[in-house]
Image (cartoon, rainbow, N blue to C red; front, side):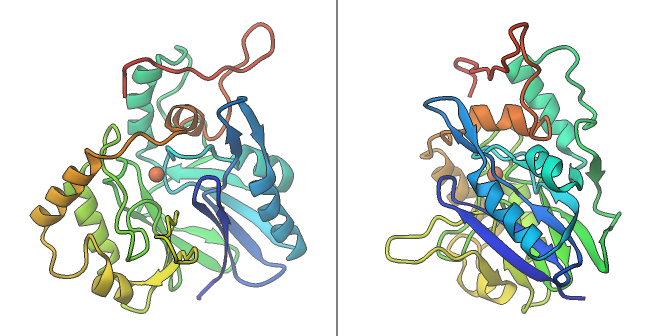
Length: 286
Ligand SMILES: [Fe+2]
């Protein structure tokens, strides 16, 4: 069964949050929610998540899952906030445990920080579909940008996470800890082997000047036009391009705040003895 898909673009992080559902009054899943965060003041706000919550309530949807395609490095997840308002189980790909291992060391997290993904309600594996009411969601393991990236396929719709961007933008970077451009190439080929009419929903859009924000495309369009990885580009060509380009990119503004929250399923670190939760900035590690 093909789902209905509603995307919400957050201009402060260029991220798209999706609600996927059968029809008004049905079950739904929310994919890649955003908690707004101001690095200047250290204050979080919920305006992006509230728009999604309003849509879910207006359509009388029942949230079954709040999914992450990966541990994002450019925004904090609003999953716990949405769960408190609407219910649902917070889930991410099972390889998040690898990412937790890498970043527990970088952030020197508290000894009690578990490396088994138990901060999430559920860990998703490629071979185990989820039910969202009448819809079946299949996870596709698509590492490369991170070692834990998942894409989620529901009927003719695939939420690609950070693998592909729109054809005129290209592909996600592969230079974060655990990233690998060879692996991303294989993951993208896996996505582009789906039927040509498959609808692909991007996790981000960074529109070139003069183009409106867009975040839906198809397998056929990506195979014909993706500037980094259209049909005919070899793995070596892709890896050379990706590696050279990644060497020129700065770290995302919110990578340090985001990752330490997102590997906890969107929870802030345990409060200190004054009741305040603090984020850490490791010096000279990234
Ligand atoms: Fe990402």
